[in-house]
Image (cartoon, rainbow, N blue to C red):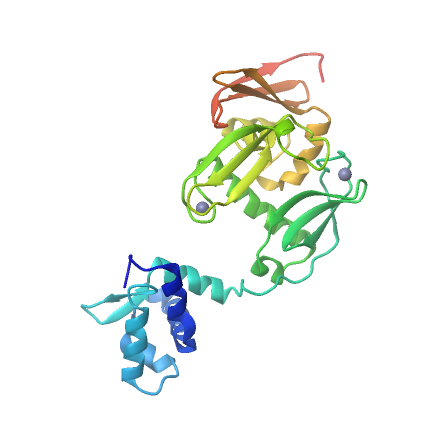
Length: 305
Ligand SMILES: [Zn+2]
Ligand SMILES: [Zn+2]
């Protein structure tokens, strides 16, 4: 057992329900022990908590789980989670295998990326958190939700939770780290005219970011992706907009009134310029083909905007 194992074998190990019970028990006991700072559990502590006929049966099941879901510390005969064990048990405890509860519609602030109208309602559609535009009757932005995220939240509280997760995901993927598996994310820039869009896209370029390990894919209008650069965060903060406190649907309006624009300024290698305009100030970011910001420029243009 161990690193040679296939995913098939890993799931077969869980076919006996007592094993999942053991993993759940270890997680709950670890939590109860947190003030002691001990992450591993002894054989007898597990035996006291799991409903099992005798010690030899527990011994057998622990043996099966060890190497894949649990690690055994031989010096004190105790058990702790492997990475796979921890991932699985958190997923099970959060009950993220259930269907998410129905949502909304919740009226919310933000613009439609197809028509620019400020008429969004949040709904849950196909397991995605959908910002639906009531003006053009299309989905304006969709983002994944997890059942635990929806379970105890409603209204603004739920919208905030989706926005918070989105911000975290985008900050990580911008720096090449997958928000799901921590594998490597690679980003390129696509011309929107080469992509089959359901409507007229508001900007000519989008970023396409893909995890090389788990295949998570994220795509954003180029100015929205660039907005998470520290220079932009600081610029917008100085003009009353907290980039880190909003879901991306709040930014769609800026793509429509040309406050946020993107153009290609060189080819071979391609270079892109994103401009953010707030009041009479402008911030320019220059990006290479991987959407990495190479340099920035602040411009003050009196009498304009
Ligand atoms: Zn619309
Ligand atoms: Zn990944």
